[in-house]
Image (cartoon, rainbow, N blue to C red):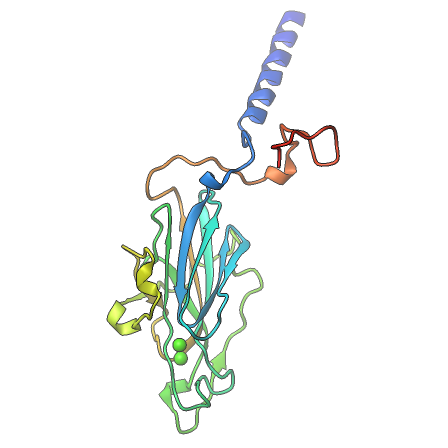
Length: 236
Ligand SMILES: [Ca+2]
Ligand SMILES: [Ca+2]
């Protein structure tokens, strides 16, 4: 009986050890990141796995591309706020002389691209019915946790794809890799001015195996901690 108990205890210890070993093996390196190329008419906020990772650094003009390194972890929840420049009261721009149109496109270094499999829901639109004589906008409240991993977007509509001709991207769009990605928006690329997008990338589209570094801050690192013990020169 005692032998059995000891064997079971040993087994438990081994299971615990293997659980620990299965945790992220090291700190992430820049080679573990993938490049995110993002272009929005006019601006965006990008969340990955519930964290804000990029915002459009130039919200109106020129039409810039934001290209940043991100650390992927799968399944990967991507949530984006797309913002077409508009007067919040009328939904129009350029001193209420122009309806203006939106558009969003993204490509990640793992092969993730925007297309009609993404969800897209409008939260502010106008001028209602395209009425530019008496323009007014309408909005619905944006859920507080719209970018969270566990947010339920099952009732959201799917995004609509638009051609490059319809969106008319401007330089320097053509200098960046958006191959295979589609421009998306909600149904009305002119009237819909604030649109939220969501998708879940179950596994890397390029099939490459990548470590999952989530929860790294909750673990005791293998190398000495800052301020605790001696740090090796290259341990940063
Ligand atoms: Ca518009
Ligand atoms: Ca616009």
